[in-house]
Image (cartoon, rainbow, N blue to C red; front, side):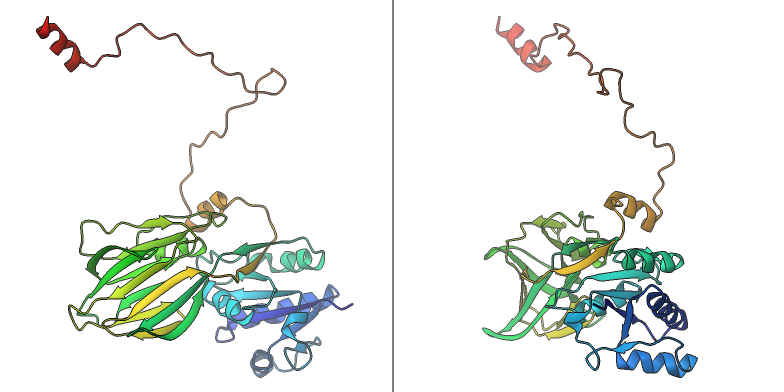
Amino acid sequence: MNRRVLVLAHTGREESMIAAREACAQLHGSGLVPVMTAQQQKDLETHFGSLDHPTEILEADVALADVELVMVLGGDGTILRAAELVRGIDVPLLGVNLGHVGFLAESERADLAQTVQWVASRSYSVEERMTIDVSVWIQGRKVAHSWALNEAAIEKASRERMIEIVTEVDGKPLTSYGCDGIVLATPTGSTAYAFSAGGPVVWPEVEALLIAPISAHALFARPLVVSPHSRLAVEILTRTDAQGVLWCDGRRSVDLPPGARVEVTRSAQPVQLARISATPFSARLVRKFELPIHGWRGPAPLGTNGGQVEEVPPQPWSGKSLTPRWAESRKESDE
């Protein structure tokens, strides 16, 4: 049975098209069948001429459900576009970073040939990433429904005016303030827009939802981490006529007039990401953000007692009174 790999690339960049041509050739040389969309193959043939290896066309020659893996060549934006394509279909994404940080990507451009070999030998695992369902309500009527892998971001529509919002968790109002916007994110999105807004970095395997205000004019407007089963809501207040706009993963937008309500819950459809290494998330943080780790000594060395670390015995208490000084002075005065 032929194993098919869909190659998706940002054909507006020459570097990405070169990588796509190389990936298709290497997949074919490894015994796999490269698949491309009709438009992307047309773009490559226009740029390079006829391709020197056979490819199948998505939907014309093969259905997306029959593809084993989607190899995404580009930055996080290209991976988010690919996530739209596989929404609702159990096909994992494997990102090869051609962008800047590329937090969603699993490998780098220089490792393309090795990545193809890992795919050919099935030396990869698949992990599920939480997504969110996003609904927009206006005057009690649902006017839009979308989803996001990273975040749902509510922003002010006009540069010169902030929006007034009230946040809600599990059907109860939390607080209201004026702001430039607010980010409702997944753990995957904690290193994206929410991170830029001052939110916490959350490990991908942690199940939670995040709230990160953007330039809020309030004393209590801190980033929050809430239960993955919570229902989050943000309402655009009518105290002013400032308009807002909702962006899902920076790709799908909905205008938000005063009085609009945005609800966010955990989605039942996760996104599958292929992993080709067991690198801990902490190591990925260090690599992607180039964090300083000089001087690190590592864990304590193993002891000689059966390979176990020797524990320090508990020390006896020095005998000093646990009574605070203010209590001792009061006791003396009473006597």
